Image (cartoon, rainbow, N blue to C red; front, side, top):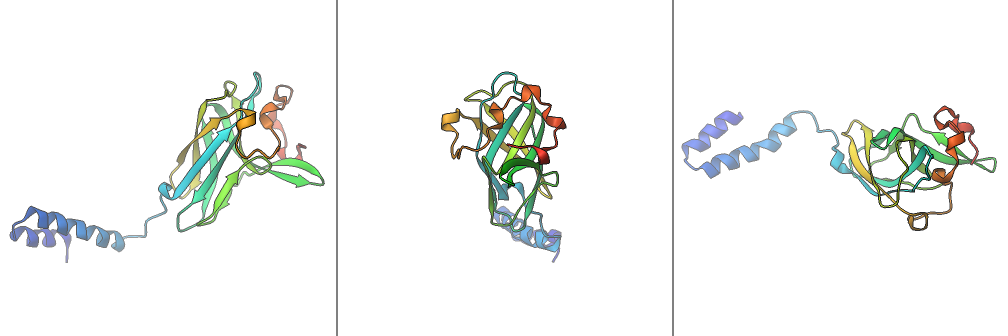
Amino acid sequence: MELSSLIRRFARHGSTIAVVAAVASCIPLMAAAGTAPEPHASGVMVEHGWSRPTPPGTAVGVGYMVIHNHTDAAVRLTGATSEVATDVSIHKTIADNGMMRMKPLPDGLSIDSGQSVEFKPLSYHLMLEGLKQPLKVGQKIPVTLKFERIPAQNAVLDVRSLDNSGKDDGGVDHSTMNHSIIEHSNMSHSDMDH
């Protein structure tokens, strides 16, 4: 039965409430008749976002967080942006012959349905490159995470002091490295020793 004829049928019986109820009951039927909806950003949750302060003159910062995929399919984090940096990229720190190396993930990071990925020292992290100003304790850094097939997700990184950075396992602290003598954006991250 078409929606318009259903509404007319209930309208003849008088009640506005009946018309509203009829329309509301048809919405799931209309949705089912079309294609299945794509996963929505509300199914991806970002929490525990944090970063570290950077000394003056440092052009690179880091971003850590936990991303939960509550959708019914894998999602791929493809990139990120932030107003505090000219570029934001996804990296993973890996052990290679006893050396810690940073590896960029230009194809992004896939997160399976029902799974979570923690961005933390010595693991996945965001590189905030070309910082416009040093990151300061107490600052809240807005970051927009871009995903394949679903809308972008906004997150906030709280800049915490080095002694209050959450689960800091003593990993590589990019924010305290002397980046002023190194052009980070031109480096081959796959060859970078940490």
